[in-house]
Length: 271
Image (cartoon, helix red, strand yellow):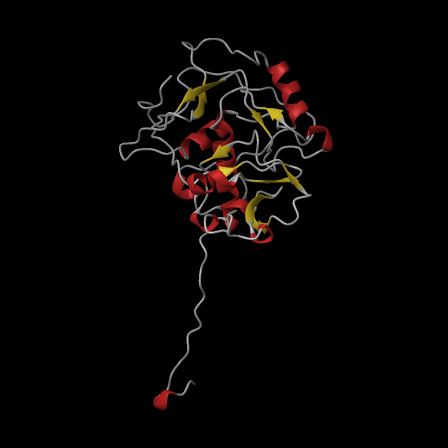
């Protein structure tokens, strides 16, 4: 279903079943209630949660990911790659896309006219899936979808539009770190990461630099001298138009130059 004519989300068109509540502690995630995006933006905790939802729902159902948000279980039994799925009352839809190479998605509540679920078809199956991948049982509940859709890019008249295609942010790999392939620095990364020393016949190999994605999501510039702790360059990792973590967002901020201001008195002497 195309999202080019999708109006702002105002709730499901037809009643949807609610996921069953579990008595097990920690499996239900408290969802903040925000009325408008202007209330979300100044709240860093809620804003981060909304961005996490936007990142996850930006990929198609049945997509394989390395990264889990901090509100997923971080136990060793739920570490490693996992497969993204929808609960039975959620549907994947495409976003408008001006880039032929990328497919962009979002989520909405299921309606009567929709075909039946393809992967997870019952709430019992959903609960087992959440326990397996470490997701809260109310992941992608109606409140999550409402908060997520409130943050989707929209045109001035309120319709969904294509998300930004530059810069893009690489998926963290937890645990571990990896090098981004130099060939995509100029097409994907912020400009601050495009001014590094690249490999060249005229450059000593010891002086060549690379961009590293840390397990926290932070992007760092390092020398090629010691690559023993790196994974292979980002193979199979995904990209998003939003930073995956707060650490990544901070590391991608433009460089700033701090100027020290002096009070100059009479005769050119500083006070």
